[in-house]
Image 1: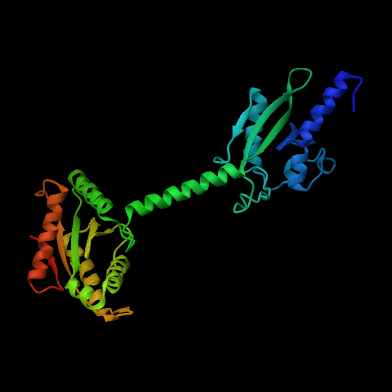
Image 2: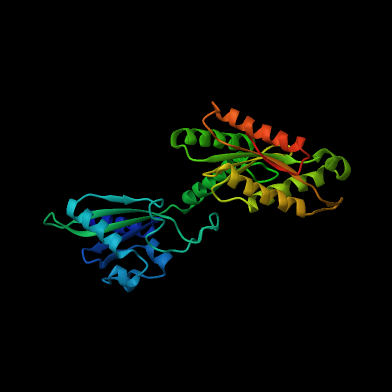
Length: 318
């Protein structure tokens, strides 16, 4: 339909655009009474413009953080400048359900928000415009990527069979604890241990059963150490534990608990029930080792002494 009055025609197109655009538009007076409410807002809220006209926004949407939005709007009105809030700072302003099929895993719509001042004929700010952008697809993709990266990072740090720290990650922590001791001098102990006579387990029961024994060893270790301790699989049937703020005697008590738990347990596998033991060596850190590798060597020597003295033992290094 053609308009004789060009200004009226321009106004019509402007209103039509604001009604159909895929962005939420809300105009508020400085008392937060709704003055404009476009089609996007009607569609996602289920509330028409005529229903919400001149109503206080917080009365209709009590979930909106009133104190936060009031601070934002007051600053925009006072400084006569725009403000922007991303979904990463606040996931949404309006708690709209997510209706997009592609991002159906997200329960609510993620939103970016722009708050703009609107001036009257006297040049003073008398209204505020809120623009609400649906960024659910972008936010969902970014969150999925972050979760995938976190999982990859975790996988790169852990041993696939046992879920313990892998050798590289665990050695880095040994190095870090060595440096921490050099700086603060707190008692710290290192444990190296392995499964006694593990080769016959693989030979007699098979490698799958051997894997079950390794997993059982890892789980028993986890069950008997503190949250501050760090256990890792060093390789094959060999493991290590870092015990921060722990002297040799207390480390021995922890190790005895692990050793006894394994000695008394039975691993049930499809190839048969397996009982086994472990040998453990402890090295409390002193000023003698010149680096973390020498500290590990001390723990390894104690482990060797445990095996030489008959296995199924805990030996504290000299």
